[in-house]
Length: 165
Image (cartoon, rainbow, N blue to C red; front, side, top):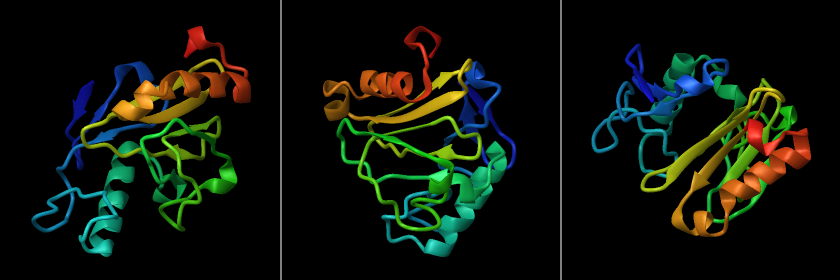
């Protein structure tokens, strides 16, 4: 991982150079204590306008629009959701309809979003099919094989080959 320190500090993987992505830190936002500064958690008691501004700052830093974001309600499970262009904004612009811990897409206009604290965020990418998966991997999801189920879903949905992901 490489730390990018422009406007909003975040991490990027050198393996994913051809797709916009980022792993947020807590720096570069406007939220007041105790949420300072780059709070992206809408389930907190932080001011929603501050959270939305933090998203605008972060998405600008990684080169995507906030309207392209797609969230799900994460529940430490093994469900994978295929995201289509018409789902843009789910969880950000309007409430998410999904309860799952993995999102996949091959749409360049969709930005998959997962949240983590003591869990692990995993990005899976097939450069040949230009398909991506974003996985929230807690211990329960890991035990339920969420990552391998995401790879299988990418194979089924996009014709990926596991060895190219």
